[in-house]
Amino acid sequence: MTATVSSSGRAMGTSDAISPVGHHAIAQTIAMSKRSVIAIIRQPALIVPSLVFPLFFAALGSSSFSRATGLPGFPQVDSFLALSLAASVIQGVLFGSTNGGAALAVDIENGFFDRLLASPTSRVSILFGSLAGSAVFGAVQALFFTVVMIAVGVNVHAGVAGVVLIVVAGALIGLSIGGFLAAMALRTGSAEAVQGVFPLLFITLFFSSAFFPRETMQGVYRTIADINPVSHLYEGMRDLVIDDLTLSAAAKALLIPIAVGCVSIPVALGQLRRRVRAA
Amino acid sequence: MRADQIPIYAEGLVRRFGAVVAVDGVDLQVNQGEVFGFLGPNGAGKSTTVRMLTTLLRPTAGIARVAGFDVVKQADDVRRSIGVALQDAAIDPLMTGNELLALQAVLYGIPKTHVKQRSDDLLERVGLTAAAGRRVGTYSGGMRRRLDLALSLIHQPSVLFLDEPTTGLDPMSRLALWEEVRRLNAEGTTVLLTTQYLEEADQLADRIAIIDHGVIVREGVPRELKAQVGAPTLVIAVPPDQVERARAVMQTFGELRTTAEGTLGVGLTAGAEAVSSVVRGLDEAGVRLHHLELNEPSLDDVFAEATGYRLEGAGSSNLPAAQGDQPQADPDDLLAPTGAKRGGRRGRQGRP
Image (cartoon, rainbow over all chains, first blue to last red; front, side, top):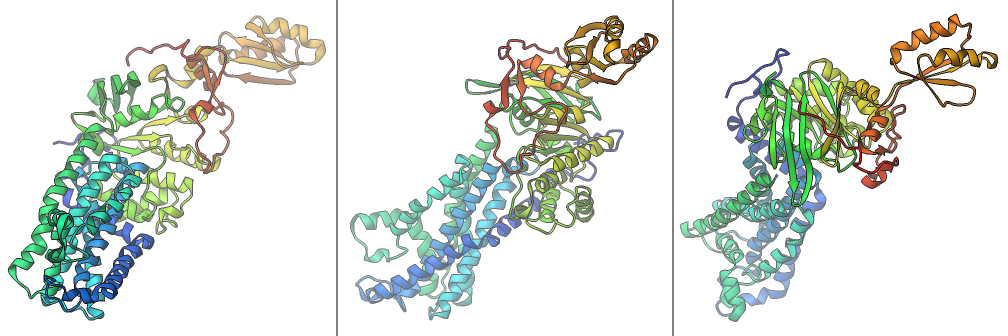
């Protein structure tokens, strides 16, 4: 592609200061990710609930169900609180991803998305920038909950490597769940619609093994929990807390969110394509 | 000139939204170094046309080339060549001016080594150096618009689209923005400016187009369009005992017109150039002038003649009232019928 420069020296096509977009897609994605992270940091009102409520549920569950660990079929755990670490991360990430999706929808609503589309930005970097924000926040949440839980006596049996895996899994879960919410944002262009999904996500969370092990469930509830991807996201991370580090536990913690992301991100990309093409 | 050498060129541009035809066969040519005013009430098709020209919306039919590139087939090339400041200054309120400029620079692939200098220059240019470290959420409407303009200039575009850049601004902010547009144009930037303010178009635009119901109903140089509406009116005041002599002189230059009591008016058939002849004639007839004024037809008159409506509050002699942060008026509230049926006097300009 060649540049045509007018007599004034201004770009009629590609300015000499501007290289083809493909060379800058990564830099654009990083810049957009930075923006997503800045948006999260500068809105403490959105961060605090996603950190406080999961801890509240963990404290409530621990005090109410501490003796349930003796039930037949209950996994071998140090305490009920040990089960709550992964649940807290999942809850926090659901909160955070909703906010990330809503932020993308706000960009569409207020015209910032158009500003991006009017620039020679890689369209994919707009989406991945937003998702990277969810991933970073997911990692930060996972680290926060792990540190707090360790401080109150939870032992991560997989050790330091386990903690690292939990943090990475938190990022991957943020990315994978964020994909669905970004798809929703791109589909509807409405922050209200994205935020409206949150109760649904919470119901999905309740119908999973995040609050009680599947091993103790029966009937329809068990069937739903078995097919609920949140159960599998949760259990991958849980096993790192209650068991020693094994390859299968590490793989489960990382591959399940990757598998979910393999569905959600193409869905989001499809919605991005649809929105850009519909314009 | 070939279409690929014209900064903005459109032919038969159409955009439909379902059954609604928002833009209905717009032909447009904006030449190098021009400020082109695109006028019309809300909902007339201005923004839809701009969105097509800036690659944000695909035309349903027709062709458009911007900076020499086809807006559909070479959209990325168009994007690299243009600056766009859209309606409502969509700027992330959580970021600072500095951060937004840095982000914009990355989006346009500007080398890191250039970003700081270019950002500083632009901030200084729009008078936001002191506020550059503050979050945009704390900016006034005028400051946001100026930052929006700076953002659109980060890559030194050859063509600049300003979609209603002064809507909602106070008069001082509006004047400051006009000044900046003039400076940019003087530096060689071709500008397409949409506005509902006739005064703005009159002040800034070399040529204008009036769009109504998706159709361009007038296009040309403001002075010529105003001249087409009618001859300018020369109004004089003379001592009472010299009125008859003055009347006799005046009517040799055109048709006498009704004016305020104590004054005489004549429509100058030969245009404003005839003023000196009238003055000489009056002097030779021994008429002593107390007062003389020349009233040109306004763009408001052109608009009304073209559409059958007037844009309320958009008269040509005064700045529109400040709107501050007030909500936008309903489109229907902006229109005041002048008696002619809507669309009844609509015409079509030929192709550029």
